[in-house]
Image (cartoon, rainbow, N blue to C red; front, top):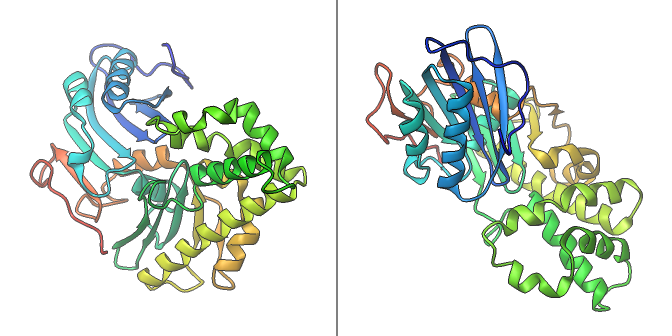
Length: 329
């Protein structure tokens, strides 16, 4: 299966197989999990043009799950409570699932990290969204506006900050970012080509690829890299604190970071602690957004009438196609 990474044995045992499928659609890639009666299989595909990526995913899923698909749960970046922003037709046409449940990937990130308990989750990958779940189950959402508008603290924002430092070093504006300049050249090539590359639709994802090597540079003691990571942590913490306030949380409710940038937590934490209320509990997430997509299949974990979740079709008592319940703003 070209472009896919498979984990575990094949779940397909014949035409009579009945499976559930969870999908995590991020800016930098797509992951899916096929769960059969006895076995589970994961796959990963690159991101890119949305409809083409969904078509590739549908074909890959049909190859490993040729039987009947019962439920399909999707957490996708950019949904923001509006199912019409995510075109599920390639998956529906190819897989013919009995039920389709769609939500923003921030919701599946929350479910994967904290399940159904009240708390706050910062989903920090290429972009950033923070969700706080109040005691009454209502979700309070911050961020997700994209790099052109916001996304401060995200992987793309960190990458852009690194690139800005590299350009300043190259042009003599600063003298302390030589290692960052070398890093950016190694990752992106010549800096003179950047104005043309920045118009690429995948530019945010490209910037986010700088996050991991910048984290390694910070771990090696580079002060300029450490400063960028600490600033990212402060920006993330500001948004977590605001979400907590909107949800009526105190320091007792857990806070979790998930997504690719969460791996840099030791370097984010100085900034986080500057901007979070004293005594806030930062906990390790129980799982990731793909785990959350599988939890979305369980109505006991997150009822379908909960904010930000849309059932596109199928299932008793489901709302009409495309019907949505918005989160508290």
